[in-house]
Picture 1 (cartoon, rainbow, N blue to C red):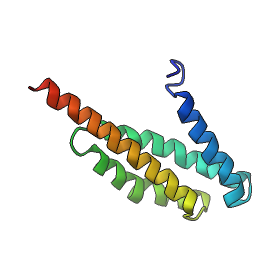
Picture 2 (cartoon, rainbow, N blue to C red):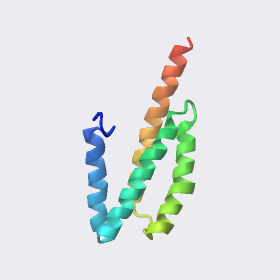
Picture 3 (cartoon, rainbow, N blue to C red):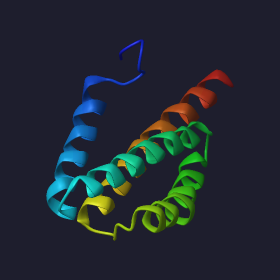
Length: 110
């Protein structure tokens, strides 16, 4: 992890993949910026997965009912396989994070 940005090399690679692919899926720089906004907001909401036992549920609800409708309305992008892939990658990361934090909490209480 880079101390200045908090991102690992893999995070940057995934972000660049999503943004570069958006150029072809949405046909221009506007789509790239929309996907960048969506990726940043999804990344921030991933922090909700730190909540033990149910953080991923809160994360998914915020992503689906708050972030996606707002970004879709603000930027005008439609749901595609790219936005679905971004959603599910974040959900899987959230599940892993929630399980890890829950396991730490349970282990500390034994």
